[in-house]
Image: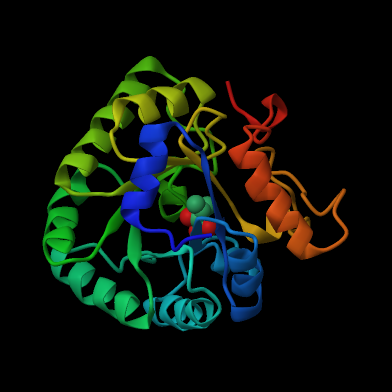
Length: 263
Ligand code: KIV
């Protein structure tokens, strides 16, 4: 596989080709993901749940994100390396700039921020200064207490239209990718059609431009397998084979299947 860049992902969207993303938190898994030719590696703040055993991503710190980014970077030289900005690390523009710089120095090639329209000025400021940004809309786990739990978002027409409008604002501000989490499949499709930049879905149906999964879910070692995920180790004989099968299933449009989607 060639090295993934923002322009190669954009070209895949234009050509109608799907791509795969997956989370990683350490060097060894990053190596397996690289060998499986997965296009995007995300150092997700889900590390708070799956590596630290916390019940939300809220306690995760910028130093922890930088530590895991450095480890993943050592094992990954081909896929685009994106890192989550953790809770309260981008509440103001100054915080966003200072903390994004820490992650970029640790090896990230892009940072991901959860939220809508309120992030526009920060995204503009980061991208103008050479820091690529991925937005994250839909279910935004850092806002779990405001949302009242881990629930499917954008079910009502008004909420769906609002989400599309806010995602367009993020694109106009300079975001190069958008993650959309836990929304009805129809909204995942409409969002991907409404934006020019690639949309990566998780629990957002089969029609987004790409899919992302939490690594520990897709190899079946999480405490609970979410509805939108699949244990790819089930028919595989190794973790390497499972990650490769996941990439192929996304590119061949075999994942997600109807049972992984929300209405
Ligand atoms: O932290 C994470 O793993 C994420 C994915 C769920 C997209 O943000």
